[in-house]
Image (cartoon, each protein chain N blue to C red):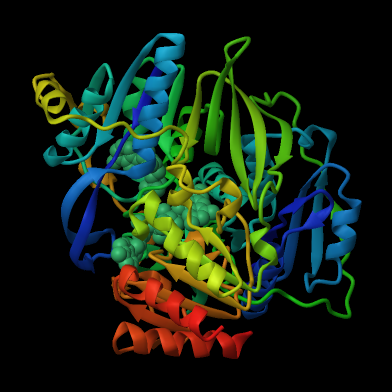
Length: 255
Length: 326
Ligand SMILES: Cc1cc2nc3c(=O)[nH]c(=O)nc-3n(C[C@H](O)[C@H](O)[C@H](O)COP(=O)(O)OP(=O)(O)OC[C@H]3O[C@@H](n4cnc5c(N)ncnc54)[C@H](O)[C@@H]3O)c2cc1C
Ligand SMILES: Nc1ncnc2c1ncn2[C@@H]1O[C@H](COP(=O)(O)O)[C@@H](O)[C@H]1O
């Protein structure tokens, strides 16, 4: 089984976030880049499927040069090859157009993405890629079984503790949830070795796309601000004893 | 320009989900402002019980696509049907609840309509005839306000709990049935079965006091301090998703979109950041107390009382005082 996993490098901390003057994207300074959590789960699942059924795993990312580190980590974990598309956009429409264009150049039976990235909180790119490629998809997948007749059976969350069992014909795209596989630890020595591997780089031009095409279309960012509180929170001050006493009285009051 | 507002109805086992009534409340407000109709769109098979429950919930009409082929339809076929109806009637807005079902459908419906969906939104309003939505970004530490400029139907998915559900009214909406030709469309994602997670241990949705633990606890061994506080307060222990993902607590203790919804008298969140998928399972709690060392954690947006501190400094002391005073 040929599996492509879409993994995104996301910042752990961002500062100076503001809307670009034309409203087509958000500007910010990001630090502590790491692989998006559920993308790492998707990668672990891909590697587990490869171990059980054979095949190979390609990791695909779109991002700046600093995103290379997450690809090396993927290689260290057991991916067979890595591809970085040298472009950046947070617009789900554009991101999915770029990833879909790259996927059209690759062979795949299964495409795995994460459910949601921690910066955009959109949960859109996976499904939109599937729509662009014209392949079936499932969201919030927590279990994958290879089934008869070039298909997979997946268990996916439906909310409120309900699950659906869905059969998809291949090729298909699955948006994977955290917890599907335990995350493996990569020892520094293995990470060092992984860095020796080549990473294929694709430009937008290689994909027949232009940078001007990326960015918000059909909507515009007006501004970004810290959330306004819906309820008036009362922050309790003082030492632990004092706080504990206040909490207890607030709890008793409510019971 | 008069345009209708569509609300996608989420139903299961003949029942309508609460989030749909919330979407109908928001849809009512927007449809009235736009001078259009509020239309509830229901798709599936054997829908009579569903349309019957819905009819007095404030909409001007119900569109029902009731076909045997939809019984086992996966998301792409469902999205096809929704987009097909939307293309024919060109509403100004398709409003979808951001539940797990909505999370799967909204992007697919938007893609089929050739537009961008706005997912995970906490607000939607009309400004000079255009929709403006507010949605979290960057781990919910910030909110972005976005103006929708496209001319086609806007697809907006709104979080659970951002508006109270609509109440039944005097009027009974007519049900119009719509046929969608599904011949020639391959069903490549087939729904085989829906399973409910059995409650094996404690039912966290029944307790008056829920003490909930998040990733901030950092270590499986330390979870006992949360259990001790729950015991001292006569409550139960619950948790956020990461705690279950790593196997520290069983799945039936998880609060949130993919776990349980709880509405106890007191909910105490310890080391939980407050992502939308967590909040959607607990914002209806009567009194919310948050203990988090990050003053900017989004949990403080919904908390009534907040403690900005290390939970290890507060929780054991709290347990002692709870025990001491009985
Ligand atoms: C489709 C989907 C469904 C989901 N369903 C659910 C769901 O049902 N339930 C759910 O909970 N999540 C769900 N999630 C995940 C959700 O998006 C968040 O990732 C999750 O809720 C985060 O859990 P957390 O707050 O415990 O962890 P984090 O976000 O990592 O937050 C940990 C918090 O602990 C604080 N902290 C750290 N150390 C301490 C300390 N010593 N003292 C005090 N505070 C400390 C930190 O400041 C931080 O705010 C879902 C996600 C998706 C995409
Ligand atoms: N730049 C990117 N590179 C690789 N994968 C991405 C990128 N952006 C999004 N994805 C994938 O799409 C998923 C959903 O992203 P989003 O729609 O931004 O929440 C992520 O979990 C990734 O798997």
